[in-house]
Amino acid sequence: MKAPAPKPKHINLAAMLPHFLLMLLVLLGTVGQAQVRVILDTDIDSDVDDVQALAILHTYHQAGLIKLLGVVVTSDDSYAFACVDALNTYYGQPELPIGFLKKQDSLRNFSKYTRQVAEEFPHTITRVHQTTESATLYRKLLSESPDQSVVLVTIGHLTSLQNLLQSTPDSISALTGRALVKQKVKHWLCMGGQYPAGKEANFYRPDPASTVYCLDVWEQKVVFCGWEVGKEILTGGTYLRSQLPQANPVYRAYQLYNGFAGRPAWDQVAVLLLDEKAEPYFELERNGHVAVAPDGSNVWKAGEKKPGKKHAYVKIRPGTSPDTIARYIDSLVLLK
Image (cartoon, rainbow, N blue to C red; front, side, top):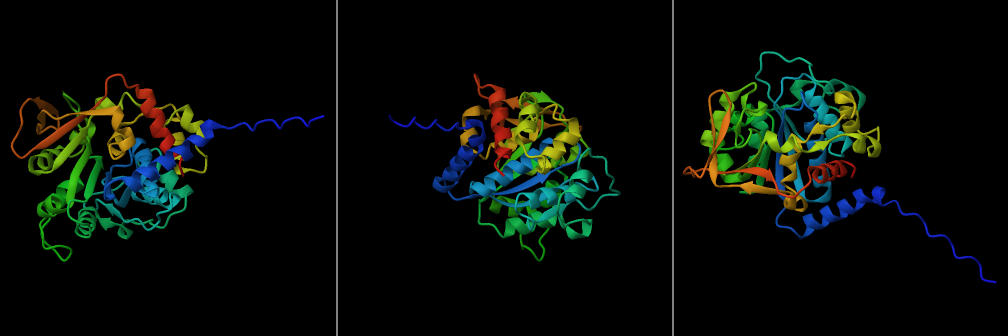
């Protein structure tokens, strides 16, 4: 009598999904062009989408898809830089340089999560003087990079970027900020504005003049990720709560922010544009340019190509489910 055949082992495909994604991202990073170098500029404080966006960049870095050079923190929250350091430490990059917008009248803790994440997770940067002035870090990271190799990703207001563009030659580089950007930056991914028209927080609060200036002098390609796209893509809900370890600072941030009630993925869309696998989800509107008023409101001037401007804004590709994009975004955070 034959022995009964062994029962096939149950394969948890859901649990394996992050590993398949990681393998795919490694493949993309291996067979792609020269590795993209990325600087993130974030206002990590009032909303929680910055946290997930930074975590995704660490996933891409680990997979070899990008080289994350550093994080510029454009915020007046007194724990924002320490929260970033805790996230960097958790994701295996405790030495990643952090810039901070230091020229501010005062700092205060108003975020729902920055202080708690900083206090509950290991990190070493606890004082402002341990960070680098934001424009100075920008200049250092750009000067050390090959020409046309850096992508700037801004997911907050543009004060630090304006300070970079207005910077003068110094011991770091003999170039002005604008010349340094023109030489080193490949393009800019900007979460800001509302399209085809509207008024969005990163453009008008608290420094609309920086938005007007940056868009006026910027010469390279820039892709804008508007409020209307991210609001359709809800991440950080029950799926993330069920899959993410509680020992992850991303879990803690979403728990503190709104108890995993879900939140629009405004900032994550800008980061996702670095990912070839996400290309089928989006399309770009290129026929026109963005105009910004002094109050930070903006309008897309359709059909009007402005000399020296290479503007585009993102739209979800017709037929693409925002829920599909949301699950992909959440899955990327599970790869730690």
